[in-house]
Picture: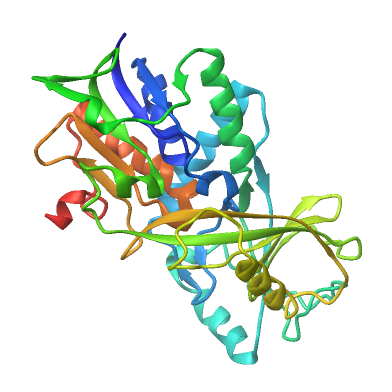
Length: 346
């Protein structure tokens, strides 16, 4: 089999790069071993505001201009709905919190997102002593539905192999590589946390942050917005909610833990005061980088090998933009954004 690209890993990063390949009519085969679950368990929220400090997310406006049409195009092609528009309500903790919100209203990159009028309404079951601030033009991508539908589509077209990628099987042949029965011009590694086992890119400074989420059923909590407080409470419909998330820098497994559950339950006591039942618990390893910039670029010695990784907690926003930049870099000679280029570590 001869293809233009091998793509290793089909989370948000791999999916976004494949969309560029499809648009350019490039041939490819995907290898996916289901070892990484961060895209499948992610909250999937797109929000241009860092709500701890009321500051703009890096390149958020530019990313959203690319990301929202990107997901709409996939929805149309796969006949699915994954983009749900949601208002985010930030529950203020103090008057100082409110004042910081008003100070942020004039920041150019936040105009149109932060509502200048506070929401003083009472919502049954929600603990909020100092009102809410509304963040507009936000929403949620159902990443689990997106990735699973995308994988199924590739499976039907025989463009994906569900197996481990064996690095030792790569053979370099001048301008291309051979991998088992596949000959390809390039290999793009979109492995998430799995990059730590990749002999070609494991030296890159990827940090692994385990995140855990709960799905709860709260019949008395009837909210249709994303509540952001000590943690987030995301409505799923029919009084089901996703609650999260934890940050654990020590545990490197993707297994839900009792410790993570207890942390979420304890924090939830400060956010809602109605009864609920825990339906399920999920966990995944977020691939993060110091400075919150992705790892993108070409191996310094083996130019057929490429990395697209480290999307962190805002992968639904970042992935389409960095994938496009990478594809244009490889195929059209466009410069990589120096803030994401792995050359910054050499």
